[in-house]
Structure formats: structure tokens, C-alpha cells
Amino acid sequence: MSGWSRSPIRYGLAVLTAALSLGFTAPGAPGAVPVPVPSPSPSPSPADPYPGPYWVNPDGPAAEQVSEWRRAGRESDAALIERISLRPQADWPRPEGVEQQVRDLTGSAARAGRVPVLVAYDIPHRDCDGESRGGAANATAYRTWVDAFARGIGDRAAVVIVEPDAIAHLVSGCPGAPSAERLSLLAYAVRELKRGPATKVYLDAGHSAWITDQTTLLEPLRQAGVEQADGFSLNVSSFQTNAASAEYGHRLSAALGGKHFVVDTSRNGNGPYSGTDNWCNPPGRALGTPPTAATGDPLIDAYLWIKRPGESDGSCRGGPKAGRWWPEYALGLARATRT
Image (cartoon, rainbow, N blue to C red; front, top):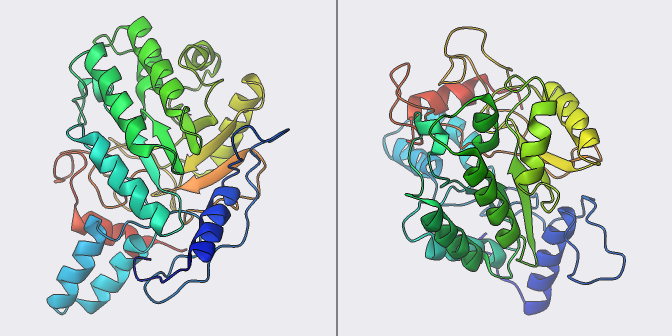
């Protein structure tokens, strides 16, 4: 990636290739319709083994773990973790200094001719004050944060997943989060992020085993701006199978006028866990379908690794705090993978 040497023409073609594979169209193009049709990607090189449209961040915790274990002589374990480190994963920018973080990420991806996947995750009363609690202090602070996030993207290509679980938590019951305010903030985020001429935006809609009565999702999704978004996301940080997510997504899409969607496949290789606390670092799980825009389903724009495999769900089962890298869990995911 960073080791590629390109002429300006070849670089431009690489960026165009990545954009087309996601269905990006030139702003204002007559009759432009964003259909996710995969197109050829640059040939991989030893420094760039992933041939798809999405960017692989070379500085993630999995890549650091590979280097550490190689230095320690743990070659076989390092090779397993490469099943994670060499695949594109979403970046979740921290609240502090978000504009520069996003600018750095999208800039690095653009120089590599790829498209980054980013997660906007700072809604007030985030995670309904659960394991991933936090978020902006109030509505004003959140809008300021969204503005900075959008400025960081600018006119570069990006896929943005907006606020995982925020709507599903609201529907299932989150007393600390005022409904009208949260929906207004989500709509603001969608609107401001969509101002980017090459930004694809997906509003999160939970997963197939959470809100089983989809009719309760429809109005909140509409008020949160799903009609202005490119679609919705499913299964973020969850373990539901591709088949279950596809069936759920198709039904939701039909009720929303044919909206497209993306599915998080980062840890669903063995499907959901049937024991207690099945959402939190469940044992025996595996990496799922590698990230791709070639899904074979006209409504599914992409399979993505939105939850970063190996990062903890929370302090259950001996895990670190939510979002912290947990090498032992990562190793288990990689060992169990069949792809």
C-alpha cells in the first residue's frame, strides 16, 4: 500500500476503481444511480496483499500483535493473526481530535487508491450507558463533533456507519436517551456526512435477533434520516449469520422503499452463541466472510468488518474494557475461521 509507486494517471485510475466498486457516482452526473457493481482492483503486491476496494490500515492492533509475536518467535500465532491484520476493518475515530484523525485516515486511504470504512460513534448516552458508555456531553457537542468528522472526510471517498445500536437501543428501551433528541441528532449526522460528494452513509439498524418486530423500527429510521442515507447497516458487533441478516435486511428494505444495506461479517463465521451473555465475547466464534463489495445480492452493498475482530465487547469472560485489543480472543477467532 504505502510502498506503491504510482504515476498520477495510475493513481487516479486506482481511486476511480475503488469508487466504482462501491457504486460511487460523480456528483451531478445525469441519471447517476449508485449501484454496487464490483470492478477490477489494482493487482496486489507483497506490501499490499488485499486486492479489494477497501483500505487496510497498516497500523491497527492486529498488525502490532503480528510484529510482537514474530519478535518473540511465535510464528504460527502471528500467521493466524494475519488473518485479521491483512483484512480491511473499520476505524472508529476517538472523540478527541476527530477532524485530524479522519483526515489522516481518509488521506492515507486515498493515497493507496482505496476506500476507508469509518464508524461515527459519539451519540450522547452511547450504548445506553452500557459497556461502551460515553459519547458527547450534549446535543450541541454532538453536532460540533459531527461537523468535525465531516470536515475530516472532505471530498475524499469514505463509507461511514452511523451510530451502531443507537436506534435499536431506543426502540428496545433506553430511558437515559430522549427519543426526539436522539432521532434529530442522527438525522443531523446523516445529512452533514452526506454533504461529502464521495461519502456513502449507512444508518445502523441493529441485527436480526434484536428487534424482531420490524414495524417498530420503521418510523425511527425514517426520522433519523435513512431516506437521505445510502442505506442501513446490520449485525454490527453481533454474530448473526449472513443468511439471517440477508433475510432480515430484505424485509426491512422492502418496508423502506428498497434501501440497500451492508452487513458486518467480522465475527459471524460460526453464527451466534446460544449460551448466556451471547453478545459479550462469546466463546467458539470465528471470523466471517472477508470484506467485499461483491456480495452477489443486489441489495447488499458490502460485507464489512465493522467491529474490529479481537477487540473486546466488554469486561465479561475475563476480557478488557470494551474496544480494547484482546490477543487471546483474536487468536481464538482466527483459529476457528474457515475462510
